Length: 113
Image 1 (cartoon, rainbow, N blue to C red):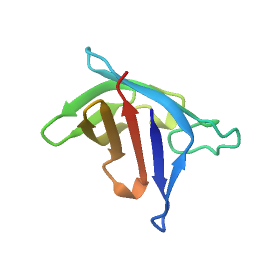
Image 2: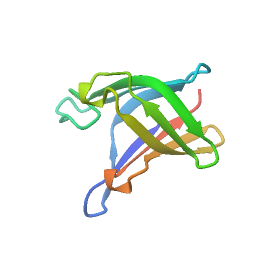
Image 3: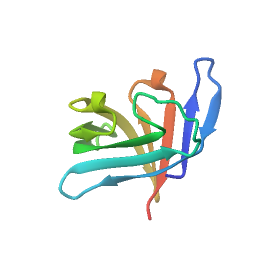
Image 4: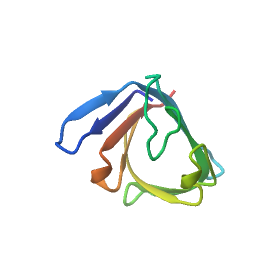
């Protein structure tokens, strides 16, 4: 992960000191692990104690530039069983992921290693 940017309800953008990785496997699964480096980070929809971890099967729609993961396991148990649809853009060695609903207000960028 090279950056995580959030946008608040007033449209103000801020960088969050996150680190992590996303892995798309050849067998059709996706896993995410990420951490907010701020020890006082508050829980979010996707995190507990500043940490995010989940995985499950993923369906990619290259035509629409979206993917949907069905969460099989997650640190945040409320996510288990949910389908999370995301928009993606690939440019060179960079992958940018955003939520389908812009109201969620985040954008994450990964660099292929």
